Image (cartoon, rainbow, N blue to C red; front, side, top):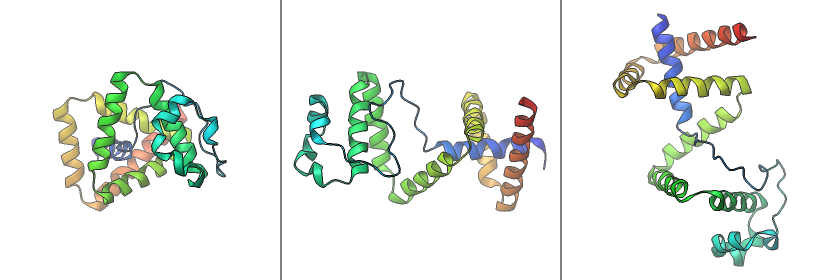
Length: 175
């Protein structure tokens, strides 16, 4: 297996992992990320603008699980911090998400969870690989995808292993 295949494997792994990763918003969410044991969010603690966005949940807010309350409140805060262009992009991404079959959404969720479990330096490597892949011309990206899809499982495993080894060497060289 040559270095090109190892690079291809890393790129494809990155693409597969990044399918579920949305670009980070420039605005910080008002609420902190959910904790392991989520505390309820009192309806009265939400702003009037959040009340307006979440009005359909008002009558059952107290019955919602605390984590769901936090996610809804955080989502409303993010929505309110977006400009019109960002809102349009978010709506389009959400419509695309809703249009996916449940099996594909479950796969994306699992990949996102795997990504979230990575060490910070591994996440940085994934982001860098994705950035490099995204900068390639569309024809080259399509060619790399075809090569990955046509590779046999054993060949893919070898490609991924070589990519991991290259990433470890690159990390050591940076230190």
